[in-house]
Image (cartoon, rainbow, N blue to C red; front, side, top):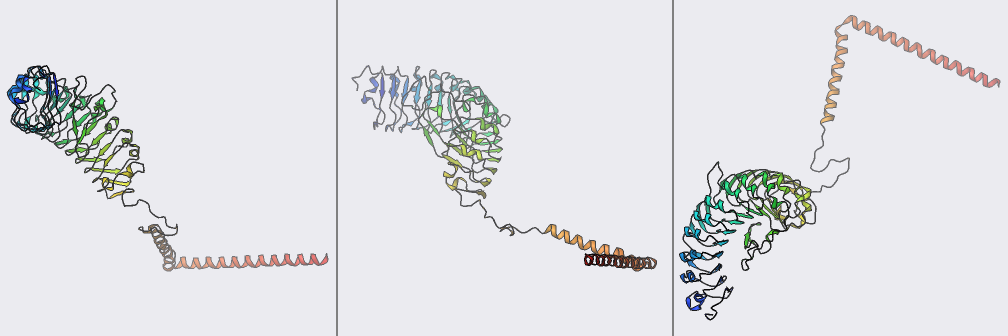
Length: 477
């Protein structure tokens, strides 16, 4: 290989290489501009002879087993635009000399064992578009100089030990709203506390918002519908995840997401990925109705919080949703019928809440396992074993499980008895104690008796007389 003195690009992926010693001849490639040796078996320190490659603009050494610290010689590449050292065994602090790489556009140091704070000199990387530092042991606060990176499209600093500025109980930096070019904000699994700052809603280009597994509290911001990239499709966002092929007019990365509790690697255009993951925090209040306006959202994870209230009635308008996880909250009420419209849904978890009633019938909601609905005792219907239907009984019988209500009949009978007793003694008691009233009453009864007798006798005699007259008339005829 030493004969290829004019070589400008070298890609050696998956080649089982286990050495970077000078005998390979790489040191002679002074004209090389692109040097990619990812996915090999290198298990030693990064060699200093790399500093001889003065024309280098890309250096890729991801997915090896490189050890030790980043050598100072790496930061002498004044034209370096692409540096990936992710998923190795590198240690030590990220040096302040990182700020010398002023033309750097892509920096990937994820999946190592770096410690200490993020260097403040990172604010000198004015051209950088992608910054991946997640899965390390980085601690301290996020430096304010990071807010100067106006071209940054991906900020991935999750799975570290970072905290934030304790300013008005908001530890996620408020200046985050100034990074208006951000498409991916990955802060999960750190020590961030306090409320989610409203400044996040100013990131109109944001497509991935991942704040999961922190100690955030308070309500979910209602202004999330201001993030236009989650509402309106943008066909100009041809953004790719293939860091084996770099094209500077596209946003290049290999993004690892956790929308379902399991890591999910996306290797497709980012314009099809829209995610909000706020799981495993202490968020409270209800789910803002404004979230139902995020029509481009694909993954929504609000699990393991303290949320209350109902599922959004208009959630069915978010027809592109592929994954919903509301599990382990305090949500209640019925599952809205509009959810049956989510025909692209491939993951659903509503377990351990207080939902009740029938699971809406659809071609989608019944396909999920019963575990998706477990922990809701008052929920019924397929796929749960609890049946919502009750057999109808004849109308003259009391339905099983119910007792007949006799309260109205009981009141009627009691009222009648009391009325009879009161009326009886009101009349008879007066006649018993008032002698003159009793005599008058008896005289009145005699008069009535005589009148009735005379009336009956007279009427009967008249009727008989008429009957005799009719018979005589008939006989003469």
